[in-house]
Length: 353
Ligand SMILES: Cc1ncc(COP(=O)(O)O)c(C=O)c1O
Picture 1 (cartoon, rainbow, N blue to C red):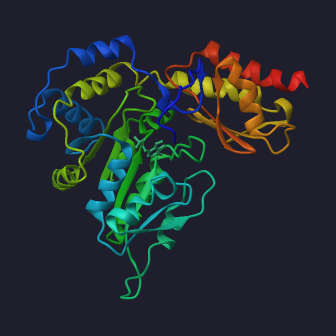
Picture 2 (picture 1 turned 45 degrees about the horizontal axis):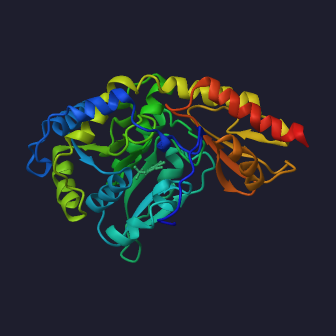
Picture 3 (picture 1 turned 90 degrees about the vertical axis):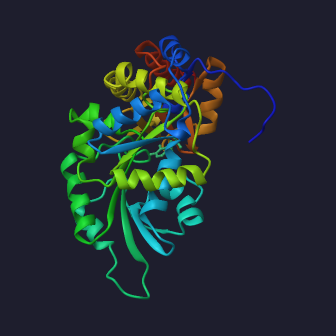
């Protein structure tokens, strides 16, 4: 990654829900936040955010962290010992997109369950728990991702989540939830976040995705778990000072940007309906549940780079995943009209030919 040069600006940026910028209301809340020293437990706004998120997730306590990645890594550092094994979907962010952090930091390895939509069954989870044998890695955690990013924003049903937690606990494993987009799942399913996290030992939400904050994640669990998480937060350099300026954005987001996620889901479905079949492009998943969808370009005359190059002059960006795959993510900073415009331009690329 270059550290110099100009950064392009995008008028319709559908590459990720991380591309939101704080709104005027959010910035005002940040600017007027009451703050103190977070490391000493003296930042009232951070304490308030942690209390709110613990309540929303039905957990005893919570801790504010700089990123979702740090939440996942701290989860494994607390739950695992070197040589342990984590069970997760093969498409999971923790397995493929966190720099092998579980191995590098916690000394744990993954045992993955092949899954196109990022969801697996209780029976599959059970089958991946190893019998206790001195020569085998010890299965220690079952890790789920709500919603599944690589799966295309798939929502795990709450019943399935509960079954997975039960399977984990029956064999003495912990159940962990990467809830980067748990707020999307809660809004899409109509069940509160606590219904998704019930029975889980640790779960977190990202503030910097659909909720529209510039930075931060909140990690929740039992009092004992969060106490251990604090040791790792310090060791990893995640302990902060006047973090209330950031936490204020989180509180603002929970009040203003949470329930409106339904609009992002509507926009994703609208886009899917408009572009499916254009130039041979196929949308998947077939039923778009939240704010993420993929375009399969296998039958298109143009590859993903060529399409991106045609969209660029219009200030429009989709994610390029491979020559035959693009990703589109709707969010707070993309309106229905912009989604229609992006779809129209995408269709136009093929009409031109
Ligand atoms: C499912 C999932 N988990 C974890 C993360 C990591 O979150 P962060 O970017 O806050 O470190 C992401 C980020 O894209 C994600 O999509």
